[in-house]
Amino acid sequence: MDIVPELDSASLLKLTSFLFWSCLYLLSYARQPDKCPEYHSRVVTLLHGSVSSVVGLAQCGLGSLSICRLTAPVLPQHYALMVWSWGYFAFDSLWCLMYWNQGPLMLAHHFSTLLAITIYMHRNGTGCSFSCTMAFMEITNPSLQIRWFLKSEGYGRTTLFYIIDILYLSSFLLIRGVLGTYILYKIIPVKIFGMDQKMIAISLYIISIGLMRELISYISYKYKDRAIASVTNFLDYYGIILNDCNDI
Image (cartoon, rainbow, N blue to C red; front, side, top):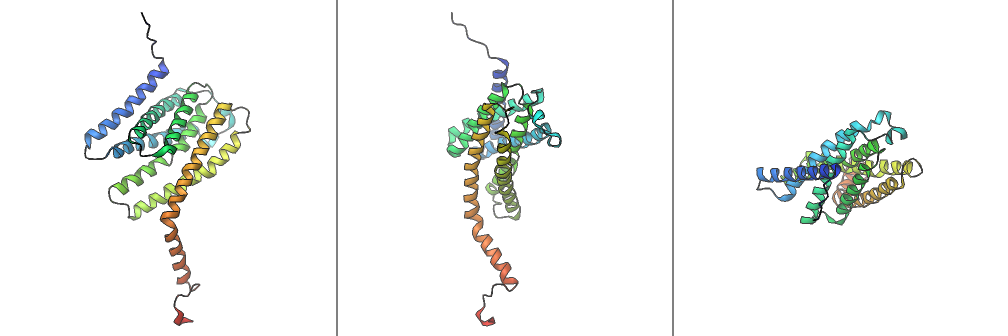
């Protein structure tokens, strides 16, 4: 007779988290069946991003952050955030595979994050470093989702949309580009971090570069002409550029 191995506690918690996010998605769909699948997926994503960034920042303790704190033992609240995020990224990875509307770069981001969380869950001294990583990864996510909801509801040309759009683009480039480069520079030479943690940091940084490249292309496409026109009007207003030949 074959003996079926029982699920360990970590696997059971991850499965429970995955089912929670799946049920939340189905609940959103049941309440608003006229909306497209991406709408309900983004509702779920907005909840995860908002909670993860706030809780992650609270656990990170930026005011007293140090190498010793980053390698402190995993506390129950750290582990709860890991379980919370693992289930979400498992759900969203499956959703992306089913609908294939995010592209391979986002799938690479999700799979790398899933692997990173799994590794963190089996390490004893990674609680605070995980919380900081998750917070900085997700802190720009709420503005991204609000931006999408505004556009999908027909508010894509409003002042509020452009404010959210610029806020998201600038904060993403600042956090993932400037701050991410600085953090990677600090992590790599420190021996207290394991090789697996360093490889996780490098892989997520490479994916961030790919995402930033896409954002820069979007900025160039959408705002280049607007920026040139604004600068030209500014210079023309102050008489630096004279467009009327009769005034010469």
